Amino acid sequence: MNETYHIQMTREALSPDFSAAALEQIIAANLGQDSLINQVAHDHFHFDNNSFEAGYSYIATCRQNAIDAAQAGNMPLARAEFGRLTHTVQDFYAHTNYVALWRELHPQAAPEQIDPLLDSCLTDSRLHSGKLYYPLEILYFVPFLREWVLPHLPADSHAQMNKDDTSRPDFEYARIAAVHRTRLEWLRLAESLTMAEKMSLTDKKSEPA
Ligand SMILES: [Zn+2]
Image (cartoon, rainbow, N blue to C red):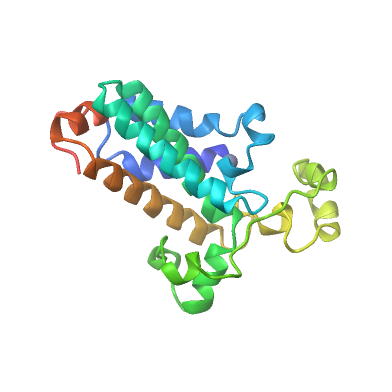
């Protein structure tokens, strides 16, 4: 998704539990995943090109690294690992057809109702993500060429499938699923930490989740 939405979604999901300073560290690591060096040959950071196995395993690794760092008392590293994880789980909804599969089962449902982890969608054999058809795909990122290039790219291309900004169909479903998932990932991480570790990680005086 675009940087603006990664920032908004991460704030929306985590600001109740994290101090502003801790949240900024998480957001910085989230946005770092979209730096040029992390766009090339890092499909699994963004669930591009059907990199499901690598994407799921990357999320698990970041989660474990965040736990290890928090237990070792290295909170900046724990926040960075968790921040990287938030980027990848958020991109899952923007770059795959998960939302379409969920909406097929819930045609009348509003975006607020989306379940980000419905098993039957996650295990659906039709689940796939956008492929990057270079070099044409590059032109999609040039605003005035976008409309021209879209009809030349197949239905399973990143350009046709992405829900990266408000101009894209089903963006709001992807955005809300990503916010819910980010929150769930924090609750899951918190389960592995002691109260003292959680308070240090969130940098909050009151008890977090
Ligand atoms: Zn990304």
